[in-house]
Amino acid sequence: MFKFVATTLFAASLAVAYVTPAVAEEPIVIKFSHVVTDDTPKGKGARLFQKLVQERLAGKVKIEVYPNSTLYGDADELDALQRNEVQMLAPSVSKFDQYTKQLEIFDMPFLFDDLEAVKRFEKRDKSRELLGSMAGQGIYGLAFWNNGMKQFSANRELRKPADAHGLAFRIQASTLLEDQFKQIGASALKLPFSQSFKALQSGQVQGTENTWSNLYSQKLNTVQPYITESNHGVLVYMLITNSKFWNSLPFGVRTQLEQISDEVTQFVNKEAEAINNKDRDNILGSGTSKLVTLTPSERQAWREAMQPLVKKYEPEIGADVIRAAQLVNR
Image (cartoon, rainbow, N blue to C red; front, side):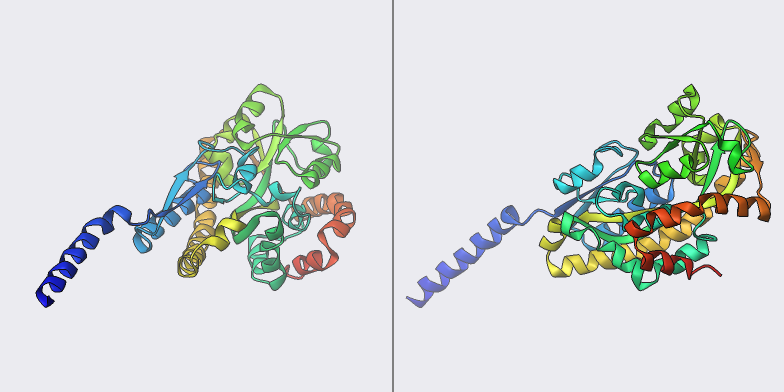
């Protein structure tokens, strides 16, 4: 009897061992979509995220990266995230205008003195609160990814605010950015990033604003004869995920992904500075664009021209958020 039972148990154990691989759970797939090339700070960040997840969570989580609008573009990526058709994005905070007004703090022109001030702000509690400001709408913020300070570019020299009068500028889908150009007598056209080059080349718009790395990677400098080193705003991406999806992950997996996110964020922010400095040199070395360098008094004139926007948007953004941003300047 004992021999029979033992034999039966042994056979059963073999059967379990045999079928286990067939019923093993498939890894959790996270589709990471973005609208820029792999060689930009965001693109490199997405690939590093993929690499670290493969190293540390192989068999548990798989990251699929879709760069350069190959899966979703500017116009539809947030809707796709909310439908859980894509699980991770890193859009500019300008894209969140319909969900929260507080993130407009990063679009406020001439608010931050420089990138160091932006980094100090992002370490403040008030900034950390902004990451969770859309959680109730299905969007959960994991981190801020910087892509450097924005520069004005145009088909004519922009040295003082009045120089922009009558020009049309390509902008992201942000009401504040639209008002930014109205404030100086210009108009703005909201277009997906992928359409920027064509719009500038055709003359549909005559100028834009962007970081050095985005200007160079998309060859926008080849259709923009003048670039004003204004450092007037900051291009900040928010690494986001679908709230419901994120909360459904096993605690251990979610914790490891958060750790990876922190590591990648440090890399992206350092890489962004390095790439922007390099691409600035690349653009100036190419001879495609003339650099316009503002004097302190000229920069102050731009700041004063934009000052009414602070008062106008204070009720939406919050006086406490604006004050926290102003305090980081030195």
